[in-house]
Image (cartoon, rainbow over all chains, first blue to last red):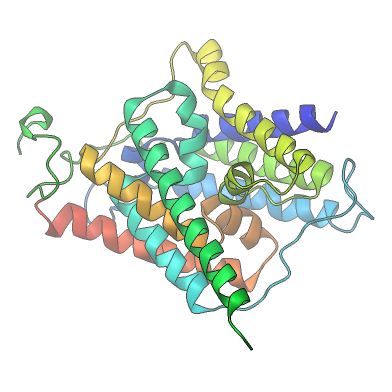
Length: 146
Length: 164
């Protein structure tokens, strides 16, 4: 049952992306192109998603626990540091170049469109590269004498 | 304005990295409907699994699993996402519209930067922009404002400064 609900959540999310235009780089980039071909559609995607999630979380999070899990996994950190903002800047530059973000690209990978596949392969390379560097640093720090 | 076919592909330092800008149709209602579905998916994942629906986090957990049980639900979400365009095709008769805005070398560069950025910054548009903003997380609000600004500046440079 856990796996069925997870699949359906992914399907609903993917349909939302497919319908809204978040998986179409031309539309995404035009949203940010205030000085050119401005298309405000994505503001409606964000507004709709935020409206439902804001109200929904207020209903779900006071519950003792999720229906199919032991507890709510909510990030506890409240620190705004250079890693968070630096990562956000690098992500923004990449998003501005390609027009794909991870949540927009993963669902439309199902179309086997060549540009999405190239983007996804490069995205995975970026994720793996950072994780390997982070892992290496961790083992290095662990080995260092205190 | 040159036609899209005039742009050679496969070169890294192109004077014109982008294919010419094309107008897209303003679609407030379907975009709002899509947004409501994205929100519904985020609420349902929290209700059933107690998890944030962030594409970055879910994908990262598939690549670097912390256990078989934790891996399985993440894979199912990805499978659900990837099968969505097929369901979309069954209802509408066509795949969702995808038009690339860059040449292949720039697509590779953009994808790599997105992969690095979301991993270092622990989130993207879905995790920080929707789920984090909805629970008023100061980290997510700061991250979302930062990447939105960086994206807008990048698009301006790509479209109106560098060759566009």
